[in-house]
Length: 106
Image (cartoon, rainbow, N blue to C red; front, side):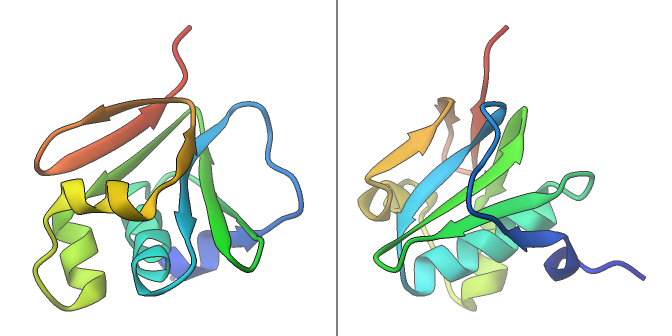
C-alpha cells in the first residue's frame, strides 16, 4: 500500500507547472508537507529544502485543507495562519477558512 509519505520526493528543481507554498522551515512546514501529500492523493509532492525555507509543489494545482493540517499538527490550526509562515508561493492562490488551493490558470 502506498502512503502519502512515499509520494514526497526531495528534488533540486521543480517544473514550471509546479505550484504550492514556500514555507519557513519548522513544525508548520513539516505538517504542511504531509498534509499536502494527503490532500493530493493522485499527485507526487516535490520538495526543495533550502535550510531556512521549504518549497512544496505539486504539478498543475496543489490543495491544502485545515482538517489535514490539524491532523498532522495534532492541534487546532486556523488555516489563514499559514500565511505568516509563507513568504511566497508558486502559481495563483485561492483561500477559504477550510482550504487553500494553489493553481496555474490556463
